[in-house]
Length: 166
Image (tube, rainbow, N blue to C red; front, side, top):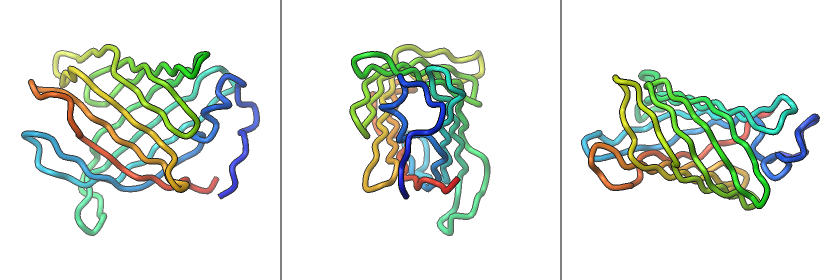
């Protein structure tokens, strides 16, 4: 699929223009105390002309036939590109937590580390986190590692997503 810089995109976001659009695919997850699982994943990046990207991510638990069993995690946020390839990301989750992330973007590769987190009284506290987004052979690769519940930082969820036609 041909790529063009979206109309009206703020110039600070040009290095992230490749993300703009909707991506869908499947992934897997596992973590100590959580049975391995498969999920459907949809991620949308869009903009309104200001200097940040809007971010929406939704997942659904699926079975081996890719049939949706139940909604899973949802998150929304804002991605701010700063000078010198720095990226600041703020996310809020349907499960009652919020997080700040800081990282670097370098062409089609983004690496983020959790800076700070918040959990509501009924939310799950994430003590540490790492995210990787990358464009690999035209697909968006996503990996999310977390440290929670007294466990060290380790793989939690990963997926491969196809860009959807507009």
